Figure (tube, rainbow, N blue to C red):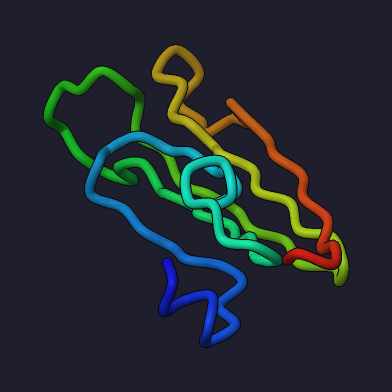
Length: 94
């Protein structure tokens, strides 16, 4: 995170944990004057049974606001529906 802060990274995208989440880096990594968004995608398409439904994220950037919407598979309706949403606003610390 120290290298990301020096490089001015605002958002990191990741996956592999099979669960969606979005949060500020400052909740885990305390770096004065710096916070980035850590956005993790769930498993989009898999037939293996997991704790969480298949899902994907939609990220909307309308500076200075960023929203993240997780869409999860609802087998009873055969659709992806919003299961979680997050909203962030850029501030002086990121």
